[in-house]
Amino acid sequence: MSTDPKPHHAHSGHDEHDALAARARALFEEASAHIDAATLRRLDQARRAAATPAVRRHRLLPVLVPAGALAAAALAFAVIWHPLRRAPPADVTVSGTVGLVAGADSHEMEMAQNLDFYDWLASQPAPAGAASAQ
Amino acid sequence: MNLAAVLHPPLPLAHALPVPVTLEAFLESVQRRAYRVAELGLGNREDALDAVQDAMLRLHQHYRLHPADEWPPLFWGILRRRITDLQRRRKVRRIVVGWIGSAGAEDDVPAWEPADPGPDPLRALASRKACADLGRALRALPRRQREAFLLRVLEGLDVAATARAMGCSDGSVKTHLSRAMEALRRHLEDWQ
Image (spheres, rainbow over the protein chains, first blue to last red):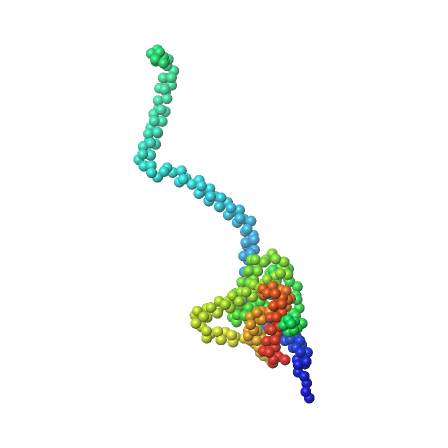
């Protein structure tokens, strides 16, 4: 008895594919259902670890953004208004600076000590010679 | 004539389950199958766990706020790329270190071996052998054909979702899948 294998093969091709796919899927489901406890525990840990950073970041975002802005503003203020920026130029000698400051301080102190004398002097009438000289 | 139209049969696809509404629930529903897919692609438990964890992390970081029906193709796409990255790194490492001889040993590791054989020893033996046969046949496929078969037939994604996960067109998915089915049918003749 001779049969034509080609039509038979073409006809059964889809059935074979269906059977192959169905069996492969059944094995896949069975293998996925039977995973050892240690591996399953690792998968659960991985899933929880994947979820944790996103939740934490979401909660801290409203706090971290203003805090970062404040920190940046404080840093900019410190850079612009740093006390060292008001320091005298480097070419001024220390002895000269000290001398100028010391001179100004002593003059002001002398004025303060002689305030009574200057009050008295201002209350005196001007001498006749001085008025004619003007 | 389109090869896919000739060779691609109307497969009885996996029943499409509704996607869980929370990302946590979705990942819990998919983690076992994701691990098996990664294990098949990498042949190593630790690498498979790393790949699945990385895919979960990236889905959380970048796509948490996307609609739930977009999660399956996104997740499987991330996992697919991660597996490919690890395979490439491993290949480079083998070349650099000179461990070419160990490659064959890793490829012989049977995939999807059920941990619990069950009460019936004959059925367990048949199941174990079938799992090993299928694992070897899938690992022998070209990468794109294997990906199309895993996503379309085993995971049950539709053509559009499979194409999105694979980063190719719908027509390419059909072509890869039909070639994979033909190759698997040849490799698994004992199943007929």
